[in-house]
Length: 168
Image 1: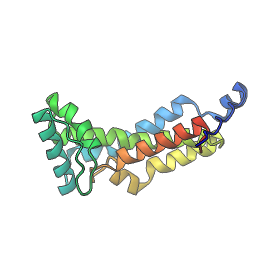
Image 2: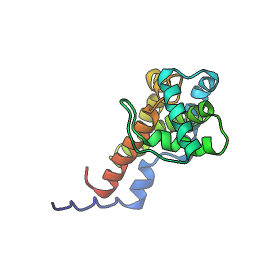
Image 3: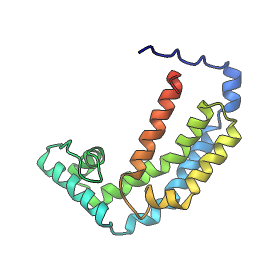
């Protein structure tokens, strides 16, 4: 299978014109965190509790299982086992990691759209809409803790990587 050649980088002046300011990306990240902060005090639902229990068992036994359950892959419990092994409660570890991953979605959307050649203003508006969308807030870092934030972040990072290599 032949590999496609990477896309040539545009001149530095046009890249700078398309790239939104870092302060705007940090503002999107902070807005995502603020929107999800109230969910930190909420109890976990059954899916989140099962996920936290599985991560707690991994941390206690120091055995990282790659076995997937019916609805969840092994990556999030392995990620949660690190703070749980350091002394965090399973609920707090799941809530905080889910909050941070969900908050990254808006800035990552901006990065992918800029890499696709969209203007900075268009990419920023799209990132703001992703940050403020109620369903994304609820399922990625909000009251319904689970794997949605991690899935979204990994998907956007993969698309960004493919665009960087010129494969998409």
